[in-house]
Image 1: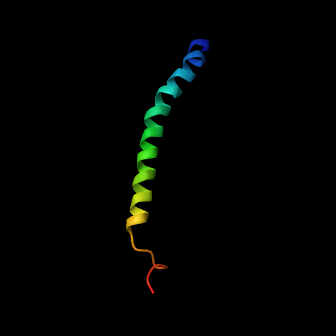
Image 2 (image 1 turned 120 degrees about the vertical axis):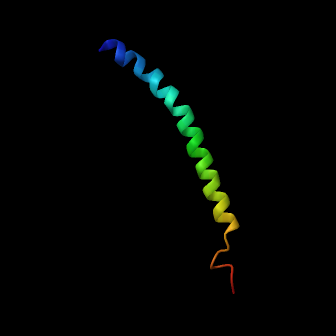
Length: 44
């Protein structure tokens, strides 16, 4: 059990990097989509 607890931070750290990159890419796509879509407030 101690070995599992000792390796847990490394395991989570290894998972965190790709998850953060994926979340960042998804957020950028969402922001770009929002910018390109015509907003109702922009139309007269």
